[in-house]
Length: 456
Image 1 (spheres, helix red, strand yellow):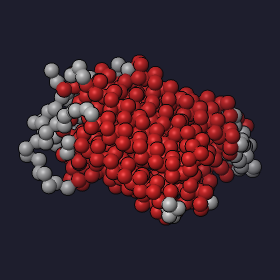
Image 2 (cartoon, helix red, strand yellow):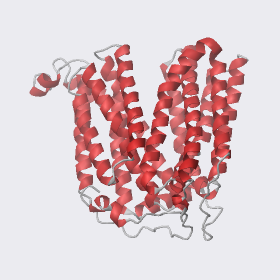
Image 3 (cartoon, helix red, strand yellow):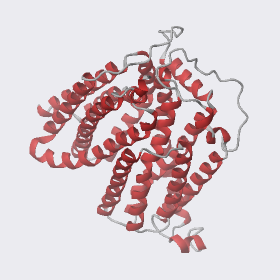
Image 4 (cartoon, helix red, strand yellow):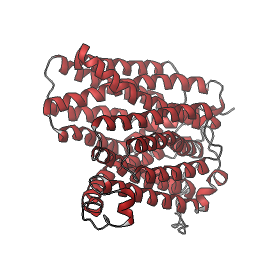
C-alpha cells in the first residue's frame, strides 16, 4: 500500500487543514489591521500599495529557496519552522504596537519577514498533500484549501474591523500570533513522510540550480508544460481585470457598490470551494480546466458590456465560483503527475510564474486603459459614434469595459488554441501517475525543443 493510499492520510490532512484554516483567519485579521494602521498613520495610498509590492517581490525572491528546501528538508519541520518564524515576527510587531514604538517604515521589513517565512509553506504544503491524499480526492482537498482561504478573506476583515475598536491594533495582531501557534501545534501533532533525496543529488546545489531542475522537469513533460503555460497566460489577463475592476466600478457607482461586488466575489469563491469539497471536481481534469477557463472568458465579456452593478456583481460571483474548480484541476494534475521527490521544485516554478503575473498586469493594465481604451470611448473618441459605442456606451469607464471585452476574447482564443494541443488533451492518459515516494525516478531531461503544436 503506497503512502497516498494510507487510510489515515485523509484524517492527517484534515488536522493539517484545520491548523492552516485557523492560521489563515489570523493572517486575514493581521493583514487587514496592518493595512488600516499604515493608511491611518500616513494617509498615503502609495504607502499602502507598497505593502502589496513588498509582499509580491518577497514571494518572487523566496520561491526558489522554498521549492529547494521542500525537496531537501523534512516537510513537516519546514511547515513548523515557517509558522514559528511568521508567528515570532507577528509577536514583535504586536509588542511595537503595544509600546507605541512602531513606525510606518518598520512595516515593510516586517511584511518581508512574515511573507518570507510564509513562502516556505506553499511548496512544502502542496507537495505533502499529494502524499497524504488519495488521487481521487486531490481536487476535493484543493477545494477545501481554497474554501479555507476564501473564508479567511471574508471573516478576517469583518472580525478585524470589529476588534480594533475594542482591543486595539496590538490586540488584534496578538490574536494573529496565537493562530500561528495553533498551526504549529496541529502540524506537530501529526506525522507524514518526506520522500528521501536521491543519492546522486548534490546536497550543496544552489536553489537556482534546483529551480532550473524544476523547470527542466516540466519541459520534459510537454503536456504539463502546456498546462502551466495556459494558466500563466490566463492569469496575466485575469490579473489585468483585477487591477481595473475598482476603476471600472467607481467610474459610475459608489464605494458601497464596489464593496457589494467584492462581497459577491468572496461569496462566489467560498461557495465554489465548499462545492468542490463535496463534489470532488471533474473526472477529466484537463477538459474541466479548459471548459472553466472558456466560461470565465465569456463572463469577462459580459461583465464589461454594460455599466450595471447587478450585472457586474453577478458576473463577479459566477467568475469566482469557478476559480476553485480551475485551480483544483491544475493543482491535482501537478500533484498526481509529478514525482513526489521533486514536487517542491516544480511548485516553486509554478508559484514564481503566478507571483510574476500580478506585477506585469499592474504595469500594463493602467497604461492600456488610460492611454488606449478610455480615449476610444470618451466623448468624441474614435469609437464613440460607432456601433460599439452605441452598444456598450461612452464616457468614463466605458473604455475599461471595452478592455474587459477584449481581454475576454483574447482569453477565449488562448483557451481554444490550447485545446488544439494534443499533448495537453492527452496529458492524463500519456503521463502516468507518480504515486507514493519514488526516490529513484529520474528527472526528465529536456531534449531538442519540441515542434510547436497549435496552442503550444
